[in-house]
Figure 1 (cartoon, each protein chain N blue to C red):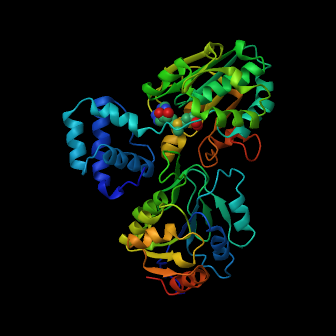
Figure 2: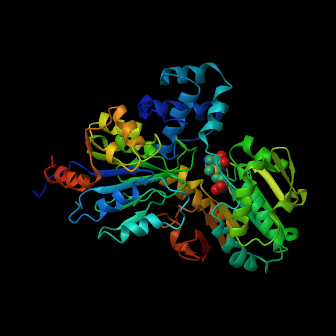
Figure 3: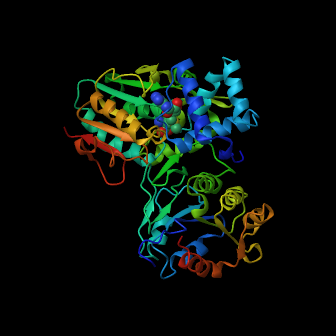
Length: 277
Length: 197
Ligand SMILES: C[S@@+](CC[C@H](N)C(=O)[O-])C[C@H]1O[C@@H](n2cnc3c(N)ncnc32)[C@H](O)[C@@H]1O
């Protein structure tokens, strides 16, 4: 796609729109990172051929089905299986052996999008013979994307890349054994989803709902401003067992946040932290 | 420099694609690069999680080199590299942010995205430099830097390894100055030397 035009959207207009979304649909985007949010909205204007903010606002006010469309477009859902394979390698080799000592394992994927990451985790657990005693909670704000997790169907065109990622993550099996190919689609083994619980959960407004040994929230915090990042990390802190693990995206860091002092990073380059108190 | 002089160019931004690596390295091995500006580098490269680009640049300069992490503070005298597979955005004058949304011109990081974001936040305090490349990315962003009052330099397409990208910028009238790669370091020194306000 071509560029956007940020000049189309003044800060005051952005406030007006966010306010309207909150009042009419209860979704609060006010503490999302501004730079990215503005790009998303101007992108919607380009795609929907709305030449000005006034046109956008008019559409929002006059068509009640339009805001759900905006909400879907606002969230970035880009994801892949075994994204950052080395992180999965460390999970496989250093984190799962610790989790294995627990009688029962609860894992939370917050902001899991269409579920590629969740299936990757299920494969790791299956190979470590831990899946039967694990429960994987997969949540996202966007009800539309999580529908796909229950289906377990992913585009065939990515399988070559995913299979390479799988091998880099230390996988030794034949990756293609995990799915059945049908035309352009790969349907993953139903066994992988038996231990998944899929639900919508909004990190901005919903609460902690359980205690986990592992929380995975990758490439979600980058869309939040620092204040909201702190708030969400506190939510994770409240939901994580002592000595539990927190996994973030490859360019995310808890260094500058309020919970930092409670955590110890596993190894220098991997974004995996252990809760020390 | 006067004691309370306010620096005109807070940001020196460099974008490039195919054939730009040597020029980028040459720029950073220039002695006396001003430490009052922050450097922002967006180079297209194949997925390179091992940060080869940062290592190459680090080996040539005394300035600290960082692959940007989310919400990284923007400090002067530091070279910031857009990480592979993320767009690099400017949250406010003090903070970067990242975004893994759709590719722009088949690229992530996209030069357009970063340049546009710089123009929006830093206005005329940006020097934008667009180098060799086979892609149209960067031209529009550079034009936005120019429109915001910033200074823009485009590598001479005739002497670029791949002239397509700089030519796109020239076609869009995004260039204040078109120049050979070897001259760019001197241009930076000249622009920053007398540019207080
Ligand atoms: C880029 S995806 C990350 C997917 C996956 N974790 C990964 O790293 O590949 C970001 C996801 O965060 C979700 N998200 C955004 N805001 C959220 C919120 N307030 N609560 C829960 N999820 C949210 C989006 O819907 C999107 O699916």
